[in-house]
Length: 260
Image (cartoon, rainbow, N blue to C red; front, side, top):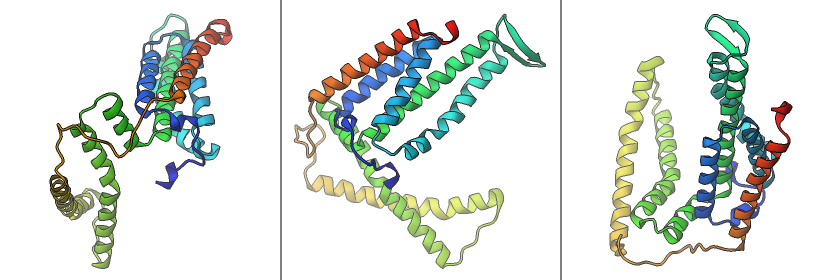
């Protein structure tokens, strides 16, 4: 978890996470339905700059997080570039057919993919999961039975990992050796699945008993340990994201790539 601990919390951390989710969802929809090459390129640049400047992490760690974007870009655009249709053929060999239209369409898909990844990374790095679900309950009236289910799942992840480490240490002490190949995978699955599942069931039972003892009721009106509200930072966030989107659009119109 220290990998995701920022050096400093920027203003994006103070934005209401539920509002941030809605704004980013709208931006994702805009990026999805966009068919302009230049607008997609400028969107990608804007979102990457937002990630690099306001994620709160060092530039080395941010580059580490964004390294898979290159693989995603190549994998998502190469198929369209190599096998897409078009009239202006640049190069052809067997089934591979690279045309001007397929080249730009492939890059368009790649730009969209990176925009999706950058927005998702910004939200993940600048939002605390617990506060996100609390904001959904308080601002968007998400039923508590769904929100608390997700919160409990997130809280249980470290405990499940500890159980996994304990099971691994126990097998090492006993001198357990696994075969190689598919048989070894089956043996590992058999050695881990049942104990971890049983431990998770016992832990879930204890949580249910504790919630019942505290007279937890799903449909009842309740107070919250964490209170989330709208603030001026939220207004600034919405205005800034709208401004960045408008800037990307007009720069794409007046500064198109290679005159396209």
